[in-house]
Image (cartoon, rainbow, N blue to C red; front, side, top):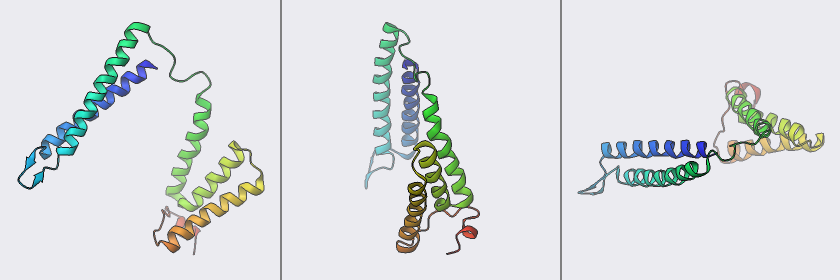
Length: 158
């Protein structure tokens, strides 16, 4: 666990350094018309570096004193994570192919039935009505089309 904490602190330290580098490139002072473009990112990066160093210092001190500590994930914890990660990745891929409405219907139906073990009637109702309400609300009422994917226009004719 501490190794992961140290790596994350170092990652945010690098992000803070990149923020400061880009803010200096943009200009981070006070110009004639007010603050330059890099003023806020400069101080944001500076705060990120300070917080990362404080976090690294505290975690590294505990690491030197106590050793490695607990595991990041206990044994058997990967399975529930994969039950969320794999269907979510599948929904993203399906959204690119058939659009958000159909992908949401398939995702909701699969997840409710397989993971939640919810009855077929409720699963079918929810997996049909939620994407339909999204379609009506966004595409028809707000006139904001949601992603249709490569084949979505052919699959939803209305």
